[in-house]
Length: 227
Image (cartoon, rainbow, N blue to C red):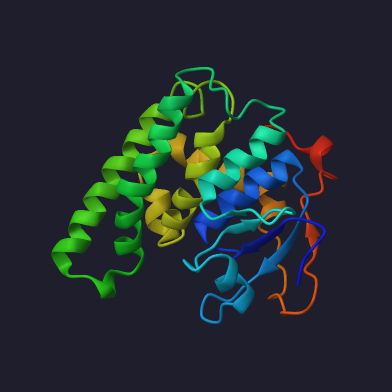
């Protein structure tokens, strides 16, 4: 079934999907949302993207974007009113390198920390060490301006926050005790924002053969402060 709008296959709690939705919402990139169940993926998703992971964005011309960061960049290239792609401190290359390190270095440690029963005790201990080291370094980086690469929120902030959120939700009491005040404030400021509320809205699971809701049409743009 084709759609007049781009189609976004998503799963609400997936950090990769969250960051894709953040850029789409911020840029006012209207699309049809198809919320899926990870254990019951629709055939239409498997047909356009055999990797079968979310997010996947199918553009109106049929092109498929399968990586969350690529979806973010595609949306921001269309509209980037607050300069997410233009860090005030550092380069775009440094920003992309920070995101890559999050995805390759921190994400595996996050998974082992979230699902310790699936891993040996040594692996879990090493994951905890890596996570603490990484998150502590982010706290230090945030100390000067409150954002990762300058005085304004940017792509790196939005690409990393969903993963820090997932870590914080493993054990909220333990998170509150961590000596990372800048990181904790940075995360909470985002979670209190209108943009966060928009991208974390709950939608029913998409039923094949129907049209999903239209989201991120830009109607809330004027009311969103910087996050």
